[in-house]
Image (cartoon, rainbow, N blue to C red; front, side, top):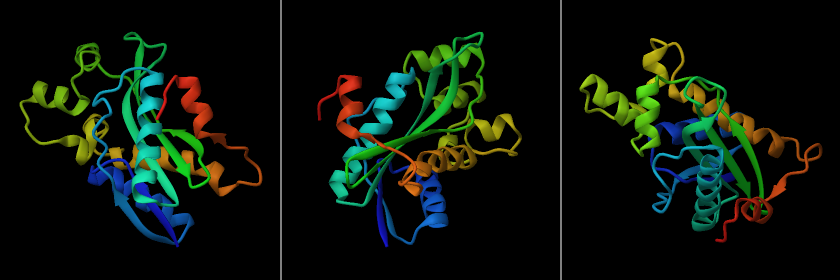
Length: 191
C-alpha cells in the first residue's frame, strides 16, 4: 500500500491523483497538503516546473509519504500569437528523492485572458470576470470544460498529466529518474 501526498487542497486535483494512482497501485491514502509559499499563477516553463516540483517535494516531506505530487497549471512559452499556451505540469517525487514530470494536453487562450494571467490573475478568475461568474470553475470542469462544451474537462487534463509523470516510476528498470537536488540546482533553488 502506497501513501501519496499532494501539494494542494483542490478537490479536482486530488481526484485526478487518486484516480491515476489507483489504476496502477494499491493506495492507502491520497493526502492533501496545503503549500502556501508558491506563486498562484505561474507564467513560463521555469515557473511551472518550479511550482510543481516544490509542491511535490514539500508535500512528500510533510506527510512522510511514499510519493509527493505537485500540480501546476499556467502559461508555458509557445509559438502562438500570444507567445503562450495553457498547460499543466505534474512532478512526482518518490521516497528516494527521484523525480519525474508530465504535461497535460495544452491549448491556446485568447489574448485578453493571457494578458491578465501575465499580470497575476488566475485563469479561472479571468474567465469569471469576463462572464460575471463567482464560482471557482478551476475546481469543477475548468476553463477547458467551458471551451469544449464539457467534452474535455480539467479532470481529464490533470489525470493525463499525472499519468505521464507516473510512467517512469512504473518502469523503474527502464528509466533513469532525475534526482530532486539536481533539478533544484538547475532551477537555482535551495530548500
